[in-house]
Figure: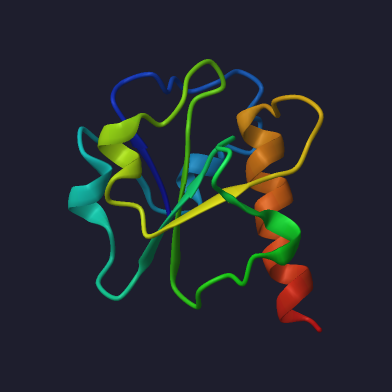
Length: 112
């Protein structure tokens, strides 16, 4: 499932596979209101106090929350996230890259 808050997402001409048709896609005003029962909200954010991704143990039912490429998640979201994780990079990643890195890390650790 993919959920986006606000109204910043627009269907892109580059989405030739029409990915939004192949999995649940929700547009909501408040992500906290749709956290699945038993899930752990995990903020992926460049924070000094965040756990570095290589040492992070992914929860079985993670609800990953990524900020926009041009802003942080903000205190109103971070306050209800149980975990905070940082991808250790020399520079900020775009959203697609951050999602790919986190989900690959999860998969690689599950395959061990």
